[in-house]
Image (cartoon, rainbow, N blue to C red):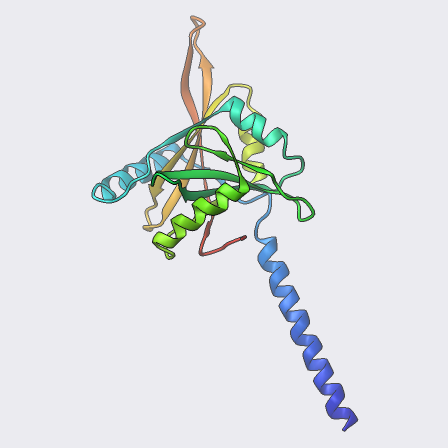
Length: 212
């Protein structure tokens, strides 16, 4: 009898440890190192494919976040892990891309950045809009996550001018969110031109991998 009870306790303990380990591993996916740079050729080809294949659907145009807006937003986050780019639908039916920070586990964010117009919105509004988006079609992509190292790289360049958020379809047929970091280059005559760009991809997508 004692052996049976001991075996049962051991089995329950093993199951609990396994569940905790699984949850920890799921949470640990979202790290500062998620995301990476891709070639401009790939980005342009994927963006063109998205426009071409979505001509008869509900497409999402490019959005621009000025350098000052991105700097101001992340500077108030402290030691953040990364940024979620979540889809939401407002009260008028307009689709938005909402930039929602993932902070260290002991902290929570108060505001998100609306990439549609650069305004700040509350997390309660984010919840309302994202739920509306999901309710239309729960199977479609809800968000993309990029780790902090991507934004550290972008913001470390003094010439950084604006972040363009574009959509693409990869060569394997996956819908991607592409971050175009435009940098201002000064010509020999002293004129400034925004013709240097770094393109970032390799984010985590939800519902394939979620942190909600």
